[in-house]
Image (cartoon, rainbow, N blue to C red; front, side):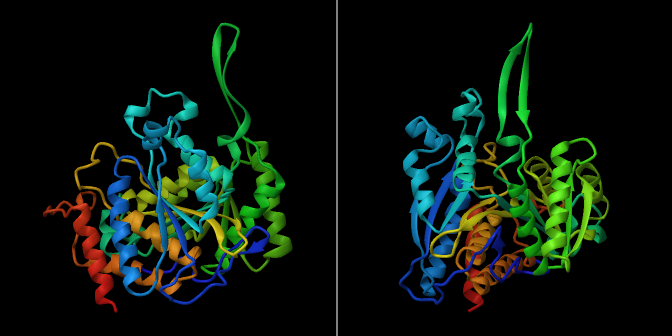
Length: 394
């Protein structure tokens, strides 16, 4: 990784400042973490995160860890992708760490109980409105991108996706009968306040990075895009005139991400476009198995933000149970938790450096194997290698 440390200072979300008043590395801990491994490869990659958590515990940085079900496994056990009891736990802890949800066996379920509804419920009820998705190119993996090395080498983008509104949540929605045919309806809806709070998050983050924000929407064809552009500009002019702001249509943004991605620093966009653009940016780095994410909300009483951390990749049911999954995205999601939820920026940076060092040594899971071939390591071996690098850094 070229510049470990996505954000070492607390990030202001909306109208409040998220800070952690409880610092120190005492073995006694008030750091609570709910782990939801989920489906497919989720339990496998989460097992490697538990190794990292255990290692930090040996260094006096402990966490009160609990575990529960979400997604298809929760449906199998309880008939719902997320129980009310698990939802209540998620509201009480400092951070939730999730693996992945879904799989083909659940495709026949009604939409209301599909595994993904559990994840959406977490995001909505915890009001996790700012989804941070970094796209950084590790030096050792610059040749793995589908783009030329000089285009992606040194890439360091942060996409902030609005996560709790827009077309995924707007009403009316559903499949209805009109005359002799069915019609599917989803509503793109944003309020000024929803746009303003995620815009503030983007500007605050940009001040810690390259001080540039590009806001992406479709103001040329969508009224919600016109409002988005207007509100982002208003927040900039009134509160963040020192930050360089540009506007771009989302489709043009997708083209520019594949043409010259290093022109961007922080991209802020709505829920739907953020979903698409962040996956596009993810593949610039070579593998979805490398990329973490953080979904953050307003501060709780203890000053820590409501937070859910998860790898960008899905449940990958085709390789589940085979020990082939890459655990790095999930491990780096925990690194984001160290930084954003627990104010442990130095420890997050140490973990990111350990991942970079392992990759520099040529240790690769199957998804990172180049044309020269070689023997890929297992999920567990990758986790062990990262823990070994952590131990060597002491």
